[in-house]
Structures are given as C-alpha cells and as structure tokens.
Image 1 (cartoon, rainbow, N blue to C red):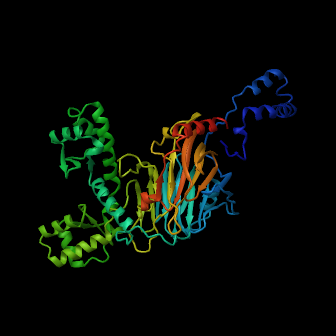
Image 2: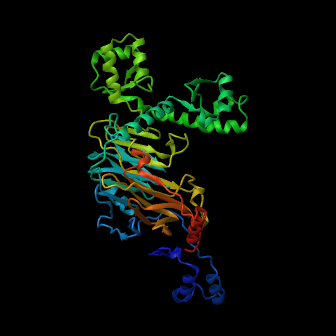
Length: 530
C-alpha cells in the first residue's frame, strides 16, 4: 500500500531518525552560542538526553495557517490548489467558493465591514469571536457559526483561535433554494419530513423511540406526561432539568433517569432557543384577519424592533390541524383559505433553529454546541446547512454550503480509530452527475487524520497533518479511519448533503480482500509512522 508523502514537516513533527541526524549541528549551535551558560554541563550527558527524547509528533493547538491543499479526482489524479495573494484557496470553480483559514481568515475579517458575497464564519472548538451587527454585540465562544447574506454590514473580530471563512459568489446553476414551496420533489419531500420532526421538537414532544417504551409508560402512568399521537409524549410541566429530576426521583431508576435526562435536556434547550420558528412576516396578511387572529389568541404582535412580524402562539404540524382550529373559532371558509395560504407561505417548521443566538433578515449567529440532531435528538456534528435559512424572504441566499466540525475531547498520543469520536462514519462517495454533483473539502486543523480511499478497487491510505486539506471530487470513495493528537477537522460540502439528503451520498462495502478492520489497522499504522 502506498502512503502519500507528507510535505512541509515542521520541527515538532520530526521523526526520531531525522532528529538524530540533526543533533550534531544542533549541539554545535547550542554550545557555540551559549558557551558560558553551558560550560558546566556534561556534553555527553546532554547528547545522550537529546538522542533519547521521544520525538514523535505532538499536535497541540490548532494550526494557524494552511500548508497544503490539494484536489483529488475519482481517477486518482492529484492537483495542488494554489494560495491566492489574499490568502484564499479556490475550492470550487462553478460557485467561485473560496476559503480563508487561520491568519488569512483574521486578515480577511479585519478589513471587511461589508460582506460582498454570501459568507460563513466558522468558530473552531477553541475559538472566540465578537460580532458587532445591528447595534448589537454578540460573542461566539467555541463551536459557533456566523452566516451573512451578500451585502450585510457587520464587524467580526477574532478574539481567540483560528476561524474558517467560506465565501461563495453564486449557487450551482441547477440548485433550487430550500423554501416552503419547492418545485423539486426531493426537496418538497425533505421539507415535509423536517416540518413534522421540527413540529414535535419545537412543541416539546419527546420521541418514544429515543426514550424507550418502559420509560414512557412510567411517565404516563405517573401522570407526569401525556401521549401525543402514537410516537411521542409531552411533559405536563416543563421545569428546569434539575428540578425535573427531583420530581421524577421516585418514578425512574438511575439508569432510566440518565436516558430521560438526555432527551429532556434537549427539549429544554430547544424550547429556550427556537422561538424564531414561530415568527413570521406580517406582510401579505389582511389587516382585518390579522386582528381576528390576535383576538382569537392564535397570534400576537412582536416587540417594537420586530413590529412587522407576528408570533404564532401555537405550533401547527400541518394544514389540516390549522384548518380544524380555524373552524372551531368560526373563521369563514374564505378566511380559512387566506390564513392557511399565509401560513404555508411563511411557515418555518422545515428549518432548523436549534442553537440560534441571533437572527435578522440577513444574518444568523449560532452556538453549535446547542445544535440538535433532529433524527436522534442528540448532538449534531453538522454545523451549517441549507435548512437553517435565517428567513424565508424571497431572494435570500441561504447557506447551500454545509460546514461541519468534528473534534476529539482528549489528546491521543497514539493513533486510534476515527469511530472513537464519530461512530457514524462509513465508506462512501458523493453523487456524481453532470447536472447535479457535490464536492467535499477536508481540512485537518489540529492533530492528524488518515483517510482510506478506494481507487480502481484498490485501497490507499492518505495522511493529513494539521494545516493540510484535501478536496474530494464527486465519485471518490473514501472514509476517515484514524486520528491522532488533539484532533479537529472542518469539512465543507458544496452543496450540503442535508439539503437533498441521501441521494447525494452513496455508501459502499469494503472489498472482500480488504475489510474495514484492515483499513482501520492500516490507517492507525500510517499515523503512528509519522
């Protein structure tokens, strides 16, 4: 198996062999420049000490710049991406998408007050940003994202860490915006699926599948919860998580309480942070009907700064449930049709508002630690994608580029399987089609990672050190299989897989003569050989 060479080795990644070869000149320089300071030291003792230092790579702290970015094609062709004079790397020709990282990202943000292209600013795990926008000051601390529409005025200051900036000139020609009324059947189906999921999530409903039937039955029998449909329960009261534990202390045992708390804490955070999903522009709503909706207790006006918007006091899963409510309140058939059409045009249930910290028509600020996986109810590693459009305003360019961050919580001195930190990783490729396709960029910003690529049915291990990136073009079969150090990688997808969901991702089985465990062993071996 061929392992691609690693270029630009720095001093803290020298192998033991190379360190020994450099020792004599190092010792000469130390003693020539510091004769008085080292006159009492035993030269041989120092030489022995230096030659026996464990000089395996120590990856501490994120890389402050990119040393190498290259593009990899399905045929195995490799092309180095040149760094532009402004520090950017062009990673996609069709959309004119560029990235700036670390020092280059800081320079970009220092001189930018008007964002002339759709832009994402990703705050890494150890980072901190200050966002000054709309006469407000917002701090993004660790795992955050700022999404800005073309033309937005804002000042973003890097306080700590090495951010990633992604700018894009235009969407792919074939791309359809993610909205309430898409013409693409796949997008329409995706929106409907997410609308149902988010309705339950934002309404505080807990999925019985995630909770377990035994726990759900205990909660129902104790009169602390109510059944919603066949698949969800709703707590009768939403106390703080700690107080809720006290309430249920005699209902659930310790193991059951852990499972319940994981699910309840998610709902609690969502209820605190996703009120934006109920907001809608008041434009297009007849004034008389608007007043009737207010008097009926269905909507309310927002505070002064949001005076053009209304707030739905109750969530509606679908058109029929809203219609039934309107009928019960004696709305005429004509009024019902108008309200339902307005609701369909402005409903935001298909969008993900978890982790949202600030929102206006042209900017969204997220704390990504509070993002929720809408399927499992657990944490979400995908940070930004097209289903978090700040508004449904016509012409708004939502982030069709998805950016994710995956990092370890501990430092691995020796390589370990990637599934230690992300169990969902599988061998896969991204859709290749002349009309619709997707590329993916991996940036290793801390530590080192090893990918397995299947080329002409033959496996290949590719090692990426911190500061290195690889663009995987459509059709490249790959999987991240091992990591080392205090690991972090950032991944850009153009467009995000979360928009068109599974059609963009094709999973594969490993070759019979090269099973997954062998691929992982080779990836671990490659990292330990650095």
